[in-house]
Length: 340
Image 1 (cartoon, helix red, strand yellow):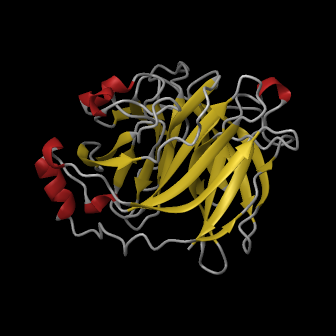
Image 2 (image 1 turned 135 degrees about the vertical axis):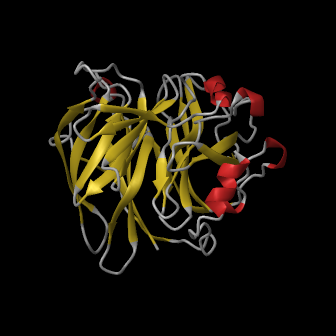
């Protein structure tokens, strides 16, 4: 592994960006498009080119991905429309459809014209062609991640095109790294940001420490972890921390999202004994909720780069998991944040 890391550092690529000096230009309001987007459990998104994006749903009937057409205003970065172009079924080598793997993260690689999709059920990251057929290749996940389980495994996946590296992270703390945060155990989740090179081999990792929980009361349902990563293409990466608190009576339930920027290559290490935590800078936070005055509750699980705007700023697209529009109450929310 040390040789792999050394090769990455000496590959002549600009591993480090100019620090964490990113800022939010505009935090646009979330929107739903119920007439053009089917109810789903959307958990990951990646740009395919133009207005097309590949989207995974963690409870779709089969393994595979949707193709969405997303139009963004070129000045404000606001969403104009989101439409479904259909579902592409994942296919085994014999042509059979494959079962759902709790698909959570997805990235498209233009140079190979393939997709990689992470599954939280099996904690594997597999390669697919655009027609849905599997290539037989997968990221070589280190054995330590077998301890993640099927509930707090690989929720995130991104690809740094500048350094040609994959990055992933488990949703919550691995047992070997400590306990997991809850309202009754207000610790900082300590996660491993794991890097893989273009040969699909592990190429070092660093710790990422989350903020402590905000929820104080005992929940009916609770989840806290990193729900997505988004490489910015210059060595920096966005990390989405998400805390879900559901009360017994549902009123007062909320999802709190906090978006941070990190430069992980600055502390990338190959040996456990010297691994450090990456520094981070908070860009923006927002909360959606269930209240007497409104229902904005949105569990944001997917995030990717959107288009460049006319002024050179960049759109970040986020999508939420509505649990198939739970009981006809929740919505499939989409949101954009403009950064520069």
